[in-house]
Length: 379
Image 1 (cartoon, rainbow, N blue to C red):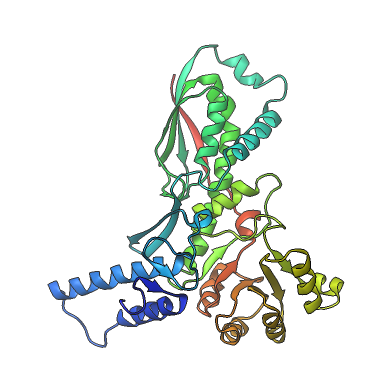
Image 2: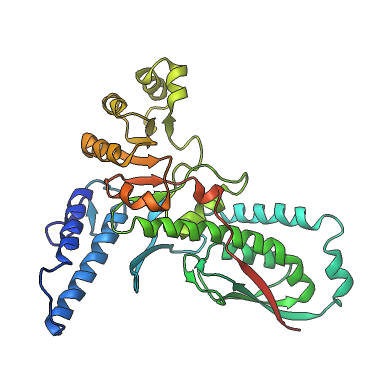
C-alpha cells in the first residue's frame, strides 16, 4: 500500500496494488476465525476501499498526488466517493458536495418552466380546480415503489416550489440507494398545488432516477477494475444537463457535454478531410490546444492516430481480445474507451482488459423510469 497507493500515485501503481490485494484474498488452506484473522480481513477490506477510491478519482486533491492527473478537477470531482460494505461486497457511489453540483440552477428553472407550461396550458389544472375546495391543505409523500438510485430531487422540489408549496422535507439525497416503500420527500401545502405539481415533478424524478439506477448497475458490473462508466450525447433535447447529472448520481462520469468540448474525429471526418493526419492538422490549426479524440474500428488504425497525438482513442465494436491487444499496444500513451456492442453481461470482461472507460449510450436514451409515486395522506 505504501509503495503503490501512498501519497504519490498513478494508474499503474494503483492497479498493481489492487491486483495484489485481490490475490491476497485467497488462501490455500482454511483459516480459523480468530482476532488475528478478523484484523487481517479488516485491513484488507480498508486497503481495497482506499485503492478503489484512489483509482477512481482522476485528479490530484489535497496531499494525494496522481502523477497521471496532476491537476485538481472541481468540475468533475468536487464531491465524495462513498464505499459501503454490503452482503454482495463493496459498493461505491459518487455524491457531489451539493445535490445540484454541476447543474446551473437557471437550467433547472428553465426546464421546470417549459414543463409546467406544457402541462397546464392557459386554463390550468381544471380537474383540481373543479373538485378541490380553495384553501384546502394536505400532506403528501413522494414514495419509491421499487428499489433503485434516486436522482432529481432538486428538480422535483423546484416544481413544487414554483406552484407555491414551500413546506418540503427531503428524506433522501441524490445518489442514495432507496428501497420500495421509502419516502423520498414529504410535501405540505395546498391540495390543489400538490396535485397540479404531481405529474411534472414525478416525470422529472422518475426519469432521472431511472438513469441513475441503470448507471449504478453498470458501475457495479465493472466494480474493482478501475474502468469508469460514462455516457454519450444520446440525451433528450433540453434535458442533457439534468440527464448527465443523473449519470453522475449513479456513479458514472460524463463524456462531452457538447460538440465544442473536444474534437472527436470519426470515420466520416477522416473521409471529408482526406485522411486522419489531415483531420488532426485542420483541428489543430483552427482550435490549437483543444483536446483531440479519435474513433477507430481496427487495431491497425491505433498507431497512426497515436503518432498524430490523439489524447483519447475510442475503440468502436472491438472484441474483448482486440481490446486487450489495444491496451497492450497503447501502453498508457492515451486514454482508451470501449464503445458499441456492450452489455451488462460482458461489461466485466471488457473492463478487465484495462480500458479506461466503457461508453454506454443507453444510460440516457433508454433507461427505464424508476417507479415513484405521490401518496396523499392527510387533508
